[in-house]
Image (cartoon, rainbow, N blue to C red; front, side):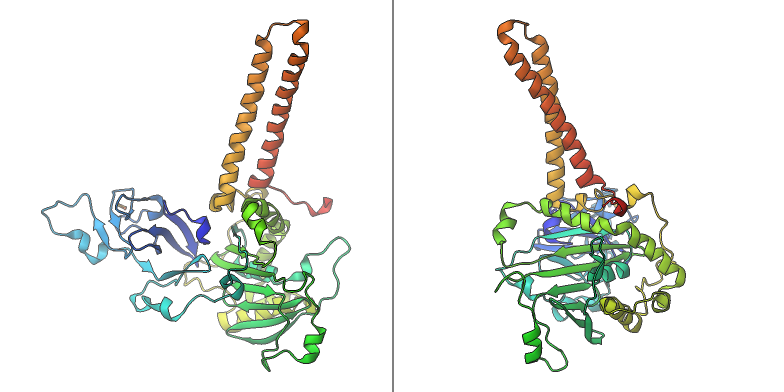
Length: 435
Ligand code: FES
């Protein structure tokens, strides 16, 4: 999760690779901690708990408290003069190695003590635009109702963002596909798949990894950035497998121009458009995933007809998945492999639970706009009350009309706002037939 969307005052429940974890801010160690979301006492979710006055994570069921190392620090029910049962190994909660990189909390999905220091040796991938302070890097996140494979290949596929006239041939090609992913040449720059979860594209000229440099012909052919000289933009998508048929997307589009805009315009304004883009193919991708499961994920290449170069990256990803990851996410036997059933469209495309509650900016905007809607309704009723209480006289006719118009305007504004809130923060159906 992006740190900006995590509240330090409370624990957060997250599922990654089928593992339920609780993410919380340990103020004693000044670090985000990732632990099993399971109290050692009777397995209640710790994410439903609280941070106590000592900065420990407290399970709210019977009040056991844990520190950032997973050690149990308090069992309220244990007699003070009895054995120190809280120090027993069974009282501990498993902790996952974690770190913050690029303002995102990452963790190693294995709590075995042999990996305790893994983060010092194996860091999450470094992305130069996210290291560079001259770039703006507003993030977003959303829970997606289809799996990691379909999500990442959709983001790798520039051919699907077309208008009614259809697309055009795209010259995409992949270089150097190995366990470390691949580099691809796009018409406007370079893109990379950094396994298992990052797809990253920028406008840098393509450098052939075979010879380590761009040929002069390549350099000449490389189109100058449509953004202008020295203006740079990157698209970074982090695709997290959650469980079969579910994934989470973190996106960030760093750029080194118009940086002021992100200081003035709140993130939620950008998220409205970005969520609409995700909504535009959400339903069809959900259904597509079910169809892929019917033929079997490993038969993808046989079942799909992909004769043009515009599908090169998708084909490359499926090749990587088959060759280096067994053709699908390894859930460690946790799931049968079946996809969850398709919920009604309104639930499938819900924005509130998939995004708004997990986005600090949208959540604040949602609460603020709801309060404004109520205020407008109250103002409308109050103005009508004033109107009714005012004695009728010729002298007050203009004033009475003004009050009436204001009451109607307040009511109309509250209705418009209610519609706006529903469409932008709750549910926005996307009907391609009428677009
Ligand atoms: S289940 Fe957590 S304290 Fe009892």
